[in-house]
Image (cartoon, helix red, strand yellow):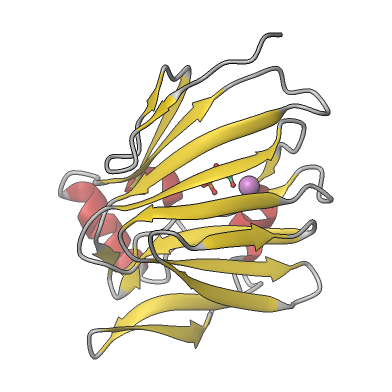
Amino acid sequence: MWPFALALDLQRGGLEPCNNITKRHLSDMRGMYIDEVATEEAIAQGDPLLYEVNQYDVPFETGQLLVVTTIIQPGRVGDEYYMTKGHFHEREDRAEVYVGLRGQGYLLAETAGGEFEALPVEPGTLTYIPPYWAHRMANVGQEEFIFFGVYPADAGHNYGDIEKRGFAKVLVERDGQPTLLPNPRYGVR
Ligand code: PA5
Ligand code: NI
């Protein structure tokens, strides 16, 4: 391999060139928001795009790094802010760094043992997600929330555990403010 450069659009989150783009709509996240009625209504009304992931793929080998931007739209399902699916890494001992580029968000992180952390992220906030911590980002602002990430290319994504049990807390709007509440369905999916 040879060193290379990409153009990272700090305002819009694009990577150029980019060889792996994923778009997630609400129908890709059935069961992940607490309000199932609001979920089905929004899917029926057009199935909104919640976020887009632009990743520059290099070989998924030990020693390589993947660079990625994520653009989460503003909005809520019921009271719950638009968010990423969230995952543990398949190789759980792989860490990750997220850097806020635009908008206002939150990192939610937790371990299999039940430790939980939530950190506000704004442009210039660098969050470090240690090995063994599942991670999810949510957009709590009025505009797109855009962040950059970098992680080991052999990490992989384990979505299943979060699909089954969720995160310990949910991030909802209460009196216009982002508020963490215990997840009523934690672990019972
Ligand atoms: O690897 C990461 O943690 C990120 O690039 C995420 O994959 C991205 O933010 C989208 O989130 P998720 O993979 O949980 O849908
Ligand atoms: Ni990750």
